[in-house]
Image 1 (cartoon, rainbow, N blue to C red):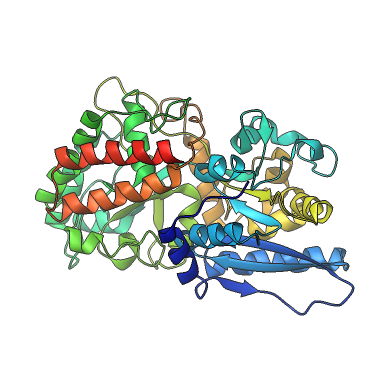
Image 2 (cartoon, one colour):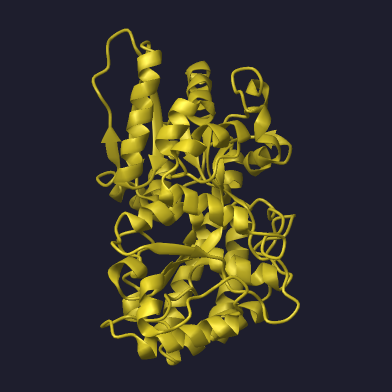
Length: 428
């Protein structure tokens, strides 16, 4: 079965051909070529290339042909390759897309290789993040969780207390407004706009006993829940606690365009594993803080999410070599030491212990953040997002922008979100 690809996805995929970065080296005639595709920054790609080089030194018969792209470009590019029958051997996978690709027979079931090529016995329950039903389709590189990525210096300068664990959503909005009013930095707002950010919405919903999706793949919220969501951010926008829509539109969900890095907001919403990427482009120290909590009877909204995963293409004719490579990438101290916590806090206790003495300050900050999250913050891993969930995130972003620009109201946008996402899920 092949992945269904709409015209828009095809155009987007074709457009990213130029932006995807090929990282190949000369291949000897007797070598087996193993194609690998991942997303990330240039910094991550350099680390990945170093790992590939190290693997090749111990496996002279294998040449790893690497290719990378920014996260937003990665998925249409991967969809184009899959639709063209040219999927990579080793595929970087995300929890949100696991049902999409695993359910369409794009990914190879890996259960038979556990203990037989994949030395991942100590991954324990962490392997659950790579399963669809009872079948293992992907192996997590590590775990992370949602966070506020904030510039503490901005708060200190303004004499405003920085967001902290246990801060409520009401307090968060008031805090952001106070920062905007008191900062002396030109164009600086107290927070960035979270209305179009699905991971932030998910935490908001879970704290209220709702979810993005139910266990049977249906929508886990009603329009009324989303009215409250859009109205919350609209109120912050009117109070100048967050930037106007034309500024927010410049944030393309990359490290380079994140408003905490462009100096237009005191914080961004991100995953904890993104700290190194954000910090590499910011000269002021950034700090990780949990998202705000519900004012009354809060339920745990965050969870330990597989930061990313790796799979093997179901159509690969180099399965043995791909298994050998994945085992090297995810379980050996030599490889994991190069990547550090760039892809999340390792699931494997053996790997964590091996790399602990080599962690830099940023890695320790990520590890400390994950360790600090307790049962008041962390809940269970949510159900696997159903087919079509990847496109739903784009709908939320678009509708959040429409409300921000005054092109729609919270009520109309909420109704439209429910209708469009329901339609996406029914057609997936």
